[in-house]
Image (cartoon, rainbow, N blue to C red; front, side, top):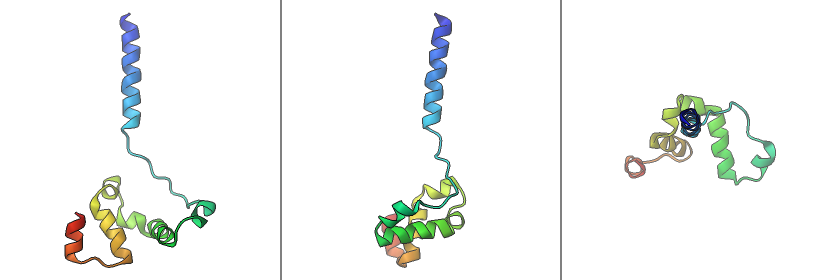
Length: 88
């Protein structure tokens, strides 16, 4: 009985742990078929992220913050200080 509870506990912990880990980024190009169906602005954002993404956000924590979004938008259309404050 006890060993069954231990096995179930390991399963629940393992499932929780796997589902709470950050998504590992794959260093590859976007599929050309998918890319051809996207709007122009989305294509430009993807191209920017492929070209400069590692420089803009070298770590996972840099990607999940608002500052990263501001950097991406600012690359296409410069934001004023007030607009940056609104986004934050």
